[in-house]
Image (cartoon, rainbow, N blue to C red; front, side, top):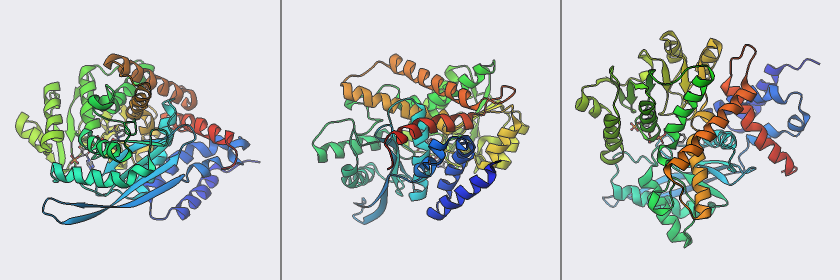
Length: 451
Ligand code: NDP
């Protein structure tokens, strides 16, 4: 019997949408995975008949809670916190915490679902989770951020633990917030244990954790280029964002001989035709993490062009690194990138390309396009290494961690090639990452029986 794959996908997605109304990012993330997995499991009854994909789209649990805190003028503020514990088939739930006004349950479900596949690809024993709150740290004093983090952790602490669920940072949650969150957990639990990753070096953090996501995004691009007989050296690169992932992506690109033309934030984009230097990247890091300013200030300081409200995708370049947020490259922007000759996209942010953009890149065939679950897995990989170091009560050297990170990214690349190579040698990195990430989690779930 000829199986109609499109019909199966459509039916499957109808069920997902019906069970999860009003969660468009979650639908998009599931659709992107199901497109590859449904054809793959068609002739594999152990996955298909036992409804493994359907089970994987249903989180183990979602916790939602009230966070009440006091601002600097004594007003009470009320936010909503969440933790989505998606899947712990291959290890404790693991995934970041996001503080951003746009946070809601559907957004965190998309991130937790993606995280499950990403963590599987790293080869480390980590399940998938994600959390956050609709709190906007922008414009808040240090004391307010501290009080919010303490109130958030006062509820969250009962749901996490080093063998249960190990959160980390994400948008709006950097070293400062992880410090406040870890401090409050330690106070409530009366235990010093590796319950959060992304900690400072003084209290159990790992070398290279801060840098890992951005570095890994560049290592993934280098792996893809090497596989096709090229290198980063001398290539003109577009980077979006100016937060953790973007600045360390820019730093590694510069170190490997790439020319970084752009950075951005939610207000606009800076363009440096001669390339941004390491000193300038360091200045931007300080701007964003200490002074908490806008990227336009970098243009004033260094004489870059500033484009208010713009993203980097219209600038002519060779490679693109979306490192800001979801859906930042749409169909129109993908066409522009292709027209301008861009031949590689490595996703630092989670789900930064819309479905239309993904299919345009895929149709172009010459485009090397690494999905977030492969390209930004470096962050969670070093988080996994931080967990190992915490369990061993050891701290590995910077070079040792960086070497392990490179090896993990190389192995992720190889898994993508194994499952994603097409006739003619073109590698479909999305397909490769989805299938490789899926099989390990699915096999573990099958081993546990029906649950
Ligand atoms: P940061 O908060 O450090 O930086 C986010 C950057 O993106 C800022 O420059 C911010 O601008 C910009 N940004 C945020 N929202 C928007 C928006 N709606 N439109 C345009 N720009 C926006 O976060 P991270 O660097 O940690 O995270 C960036 C991405 O990488 C996210 O998708 C995250 O999930 C992903 N990621 C992060 C990991 C990590 O280890 N940190 C690990 C894996 C993935 P502004 O300053 O104006 O807010």
